[in-house]
Image (cartoon, rainbow, N blue to C red; front, side, top):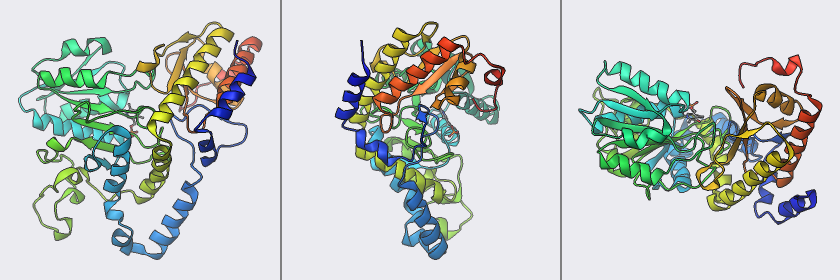
Length: 409
Ligand SMILES: *Cc1c(COP(=O)(O)O)cnc(C)c1O
């Protein structure tokens, strides 16, 4: 039996404990949804204040040079590269994950002419497969989407596959694909791979170059705590960069944007994937989140993430009934989130939220909880399960108010 004293001892010995104070967490909130929207770092407010009042307000347009706004997407990309096993010049912090997926899908089909298939898995995060549909439509049927079950990916790899697009960590279950193995299998038949790291970056260590990855994208507003709608990032292996004509060939991807010439000449390297003026405010906020993650270190974060998740599974399974684990039991193939299926998942989650335990619901029946080791304590896991046990015992979830569906779940 685990006791509250054991839990408190774990918190007292936690080497990451000091990081909780870096965040502005509201009183009375047990935040288990950092996998959807990370909370506000305390450093972000003063940083935004200075970007607004000094860089924008006072220095105005000179800031493009004076504060190197123009180099910000590459500078921040270089920081993010440390979290994902990339070289600094292989990552650009820019646009959104969806847009970056489109850019990289287009790059991959250019590098693999004559192949028709863009392969992905069913049950993937919707935007990923929707972007494939969009790209297929502009090629007038030259390429088409093929979706197979996650276990059938390797069998579906053949010489017609131009590119494989897969989530590294699945958004619902937290299941992690074997990046090295799948990349190797795909490349063996000449396919390229795009890894979606949205639920991986900042949650678990990953080594793109050790896996000989081709391309990747990731998200800034989840585990990196970059704020709502934060810029995303893209990774393009150095060996591919100069072979790609960027499909969104905007002026800032030009080799000499300030020559203002008629013809597009791609910039060397990763810069060609920049299309528009970077979102300076968004990048400044994202940098605050990235800096904290780098300081904490991915290995320490991963270690604590696993113990938080294990504790949650143990407590839920020993203290409740009716909840079925929908995440892998084996921590080595699981990200930093735990999902449980329950037939009344939606109202139960609303009841939890009303009591300050914030997770989320994913259709059709999943309660999803993100365990973000930067600020979640072992005691928070304990308290969340206490509230869950109470809601189930009292049937507090079964009210009309908690059954009503909101627009965002
Ligand atoms: C969150 C998420 C996205 C987000 O896409 P945006 O275009 O940045 O909104 C994309 N893919 C996956 C797998 C995600 O989890």
